Image (cartoon, rainbow, N blue to C red; front, top):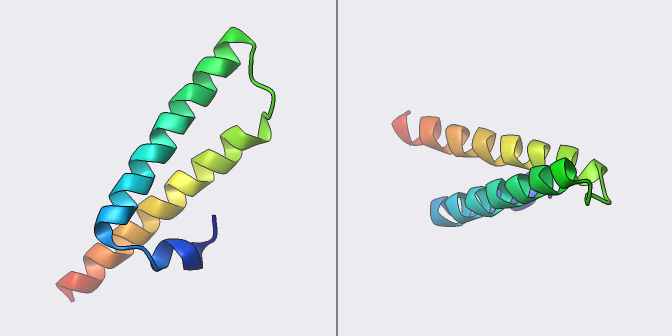
Length: 66
């Protein structure tokens, strides 16, 4: 997921995307704990996507205040 794609999303879409990523992160952690995780790099990618979405949400929030 690229930052330009995330910036194009509305606030509701960002919340939905964040929820989806957190669910995926949980499932990946669960798979890792049970030894069923195949793509270990996906854990890092999802974690960074979550941070990217949260950062842009914060930017949008501060832009509305200013």
